[in-house]
Image 1 (cartoon, rainbow, N blue to C red):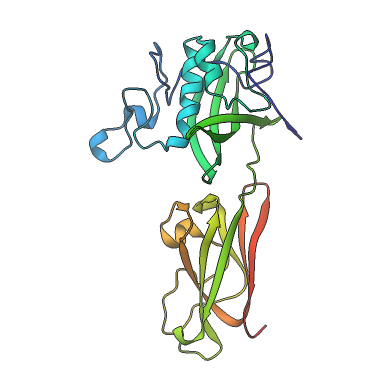
Image 2 (image 1 turned 90 degrees about the vertical axis):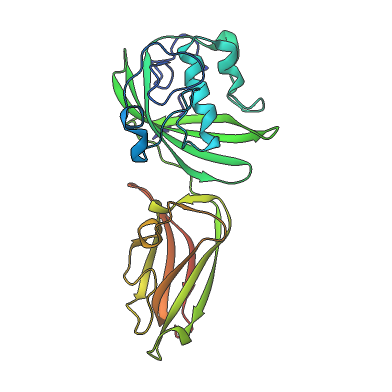
Length: 274
């Protein structure tokens, strides 16, 4: 059962499980005296590993994640005003300076952008918490734009420390080409992300029946349950992204978004022979 845990609970910031003073493994603007090393901190920049900017933000970090770094950096500096400013002013759980208490230590291990559109995004944050809780958590931040800047709308975790990201909202187009394969009862199905949220390619799967190796063609997908990222070397599926699937004429195809604990079908297609 999901429970919202927020910094705005005065005096029980860590006992509710999300607030703390960040040791800042991925950083935030401002000086942090103690840092926990992460691969991005210690790896040789010349080896192609993302490095950090002088603000403490990894140079490869998407802009949408910057408010999260600023959020924890402000908490590290015990700067309530800066912390409050990381929230969207219309957020239902926006903070006030008097509602913030500083205690404990939170180390952000990693951030992953799960979905992103022009006006909203969800970011998954892996964090370790010391002090009273002494646990690892998966925190899910929702962000929205305000005056062209990304701001925090809310975040939450589950009781067991793992969050369930929101299902992305996206549309897909299908185009079947029977002339692309040598066999008369086979073809190539082109699937195109036609609009909506950007999606983590590793969470997007092509499933169903009638997925085959096609004679005379080399599609991206030739067997069921292939994920978009592995099939196309595309880590983030954005509008206009395409994937090709070898299929029979009577295929029944599903585009599925899945996590470890849940899955949702985003789009379906039935071949002309169904």
